[in-house]
Length: 408
Image 1 (tube, rainbow, N blue to C red):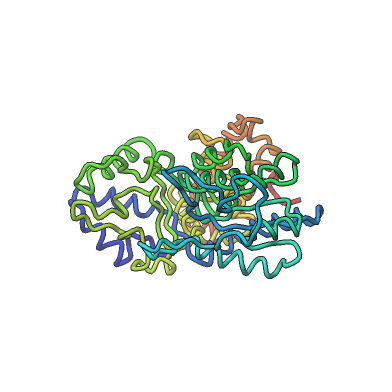
Image 2 (spheres, rainbow, N blue to C red):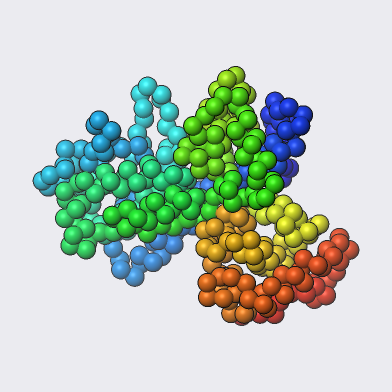
């Protein structure tokens, strides 16, 4: 995969900047996590399968809903099942996808709703797609799962949880311990996950890969230059130059870019030509260049100095080795939680958790996920190693792989 800055689409956008700013703009656009349609569906489906696998033991029914805008009155969230803030909720519920007649815009919820529908057909005895109160009651549903592509600020999912909590019947089931909630998302910011974790419904949150944000993806002089660039363009003062709530999300899906991303990428204010006009990525042919695994290759080259990282990462032991060193480097610079480490390295959260466990058993990490002396020594050795194309061409058994990290 080519870097976005090397595509004709990316090059044209970079030309909008003054010559002195083009190098910084290149760094920004190449640090975006690009997610294609197939990767999105694969990542979410994996999480849904994990839910069903765990649910097999209890043999209970799970209800799946696509994240959507909820109905409001004077900015107050209304019950998810209309008119049932009190009394026994009945009926078929609501449509899977909400369409604003003013905008005629379906958004990512259409993609997610279609995925849920197909998934539930393959698990017909234990999974329900967007059921209403009657079906929830008849099938004795014990878990409600809200599915989305991305959690940025967490506002929309939080409001959806509010809407469910306002249904009297749902409140009753929760009080008897008969129902719990779970959020499934392809990617999320740590801030958004923390917001949802504090919701009164206390949902479980499952994320495939964490979203990098400006404050964590860059540091030092590079961070300062990126922030100045986002404030300079478009040439109009904005309350949120780094996106909604100044989140600074650095992610783009084949179906669009979230409003939490820097405005420099999607705003048309003051005549600015954005990379993704109207937050649509349609004109970028993003599917052709989107591959988060390639971002891992770039990170391995940039952070670890591996010249032929793509070749090394195709080998099972080489991949484990490189991933582990990327995580140790991220920990050295302050990362501690799986979510923060995933965001910094673009390694899926489940993989991060497994490597942290292995690194702890190897004696490289403390219980609080900081580097031990042994871990510091291992990282120093790795960084000092001169990776040349010739050395990477050696047979596998001539390369050094930490024995502590070999699969049992």
